[in-house]
Image (cartoon, rainbow, N blue to C red; front, side, top):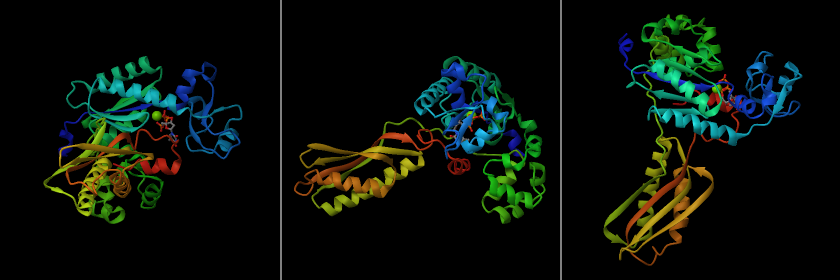
Length: 365
Ligand code: TTP
Ligand code: MG
């Protein structure tokens, strides 16, 4: 009950039929038509998304393209253009940044904003929708509530072009009416397990005690218990755009022992890798810095083909870079390692999300 008093205000923004809307914006001949973005109609590919016109024929994301073609033989199929989608994604993020720094991107077309300090979250959601349309020519839906779980459901509630608000007074009742499949962290498998227990809606879920839910569903049991009551205490976690992340250490006395230096490097790379992971970041480039006893300083860099955040890979790179210095013959007073050329693990994923990956993405927090 305490959570009724929760003072958070969260907006969840999600673009409507995102990839398909960008295609319809850029190619007027696709407007008003059933449009599928994904593979070719008779290919083994899957539907990334489709226009709302195509949804009337039962087509949806992750359906095979062959099946989509069966649903609607006159649908138009186009391949995705990620560069265009990323550009729109950057534009919508720029709109968010005009209003708050507390932004948690979930994917290219979706983000949570914590706007607790703003007077009317609903008015702000309206302006953001308007600004997005003006900047990108694409329609967004917004959900406003006092926590992430309800805000996300709210943005989906009146799609397309939706704006729906769930107030703290409405939260519990609203959660009771929801099918459990809509709850945060409940995928197909958990949903089926719940159905077997006769749990179909939030109200059904509410009949189970905390202990029973923990017995059936482990740690997540408590989360489900809370959600059934409209409670979700997760914070909006913003990923500040960083240019680099690094760590260095200056020794009390100059060191000339390569094994000792490698040990320090090991510790520093662990720290940097850990920090990258915590921030959901990957690095394309690592750089080591060495300051010799006479204060002369050198840096050596390596850029990986695939961005990394594993300590072992980072250390492997660092060891190679160390060989390109004179540490074996000169004493040093400082060693450092830096990760740069950073990319977010969530936002800048170049691949279209496949069903398995996508369903994995949802419960991650
Ligand atoms: P969503 O926001 O889930 O879907 P959407 O924007 O297309 O439609 P809606 O109006 O219902 O929000 O996903 C955003 C984009 O992510 C979508 O346009 C294409 C991509 N995507 C995939 O590539 N595979 C998938 O399985 C899903 C669900 C989305
Ligand atoms: Mg969307």
